[in-house]
Image (cartoon, rainbow, N blue to C red; front, side):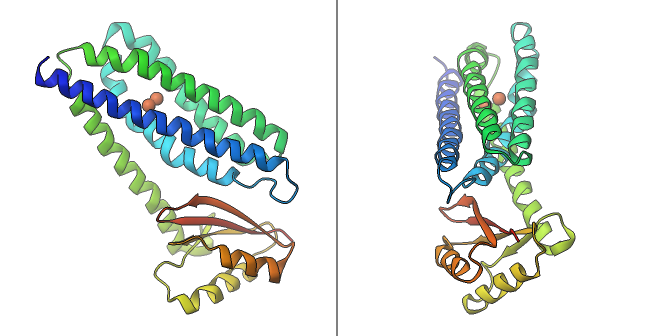
Length: 250
Ligand SMILES: [Fe+2]
Ligand SMILES: [Fe+2]
């Protein structure tokens, strides 16, 4: 095997690993949502985190793939039809994710989340056993280079994704979701800012709190002060960034 061949094999392994991580990332977060549905006190918890994970990790991965691997795969006659199908599956995953976000009902979440998991798992299997090996076998293709490009696009998309949050942050309430990033704010002023932001919300409105550690103590304080008037949903739980959607419920 030449260098390209060896690098392609290595690149394949990396890609399989990333796929495995994504599939289990979606599955773990789905299980949490389903478990919480059975408890009246934590009903709905974890849904925001599942949606955030898919939007950030899975859909950006899918787009980066469409810009790199899929472009080349489509030029291979044997793969053209399957790639069209795979792009439609990406779209379906995005539609299901939107449904999860927009439908306010537990039973429907189960339907959408399970469909999303099985679709994503079979999609990834097709990529792993059909698309990627076909590309790796083609000695004219430098798969390692292609995956490197894909990774670059993915990273760029992730940073755009983060910046979207930041720009909403700057625009404050004019944006559809207010973001309060307390990472650069002196600890003594944090709680005051968070509570005053909460108190300015109309019932049904929410903001996203961004912090560099789990703001659990703050949650206890919310529970003590606003008992039934807020909901608390983790969108991201570390290891370096925590995002919590805090909503005023009445
Ligand atoms: Fe894909
Ligand atoms: Fe993929």
